[in-house]
Image (cartoon, rainbow, N blue to C red; front, side, top):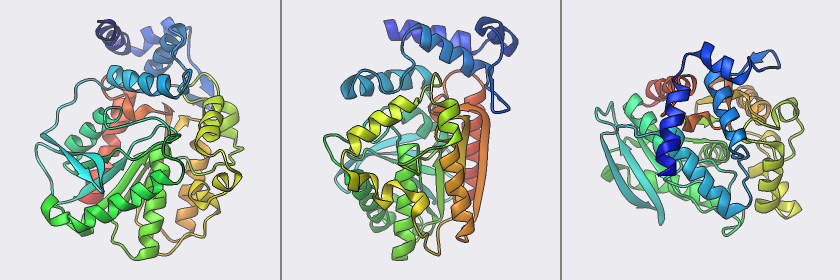
Length: 337
């Protein structure tokens, strides 16, 4: 009942005209020459008043529950042609088939959540939107997370999932030359490293969709300093995730967690890198986009200047994030159809 009431209230308030939303928040928030979207400013204000604004929560169990609850509130009920639950490389997975498929491409998607949170439920809404709006099948993977499954289990799962897709492309109805990888935040890290593995192994890969990916475990960036508090993903949350998932020094130094230090191989798949203007991870995602371009990859970098970390999940309320996700879906369509 509480969730239903909150959902109605959030939908109503996020749908108000931007002028009214700014009056409710006391004006605009401008940082680093960027103005936060009025609907997101209001949403963050509501979360802060409800003491629900920190992604890290009060612990792993509580954080996971909060992420699912927030995803339902912000994601809404999104249409999709058909959903099939599968086992992919012995991992839970969900195949999203659009109402009007366009071609035989497929995006293998890895959810975000700091390598500790996230599952098929938390990212159901954005996967529906990406598939339905692009016409491209989306296969979401529920990889193993920490602290129960220690590093590098998630990376092993991601690589195994890509190999599984190629081995089962015929039964999926997929063209193995039209397969891409994608993900947000931690999932963007997984997708990016999986693309590196594919290039090294000569495994066909057509596209990378990297949404505010984490790429540098040793981050000391302007974006972390500027946006590390009060904007959903905090510097404290990031440090907490690292302590839980990367307790050993050798894990923190591993190339999988430090993509900015890797000698990138030739043959990297073309990439679309989407960052958020008000995101602590903004600078490292953009730095990795530049590194890929320097290595010869075809890269398009798009900063959604008025957005915060997590905007991919905000497709059921408001205007600004939904518009951004629809634009991303359009890039997915162009790449894999």
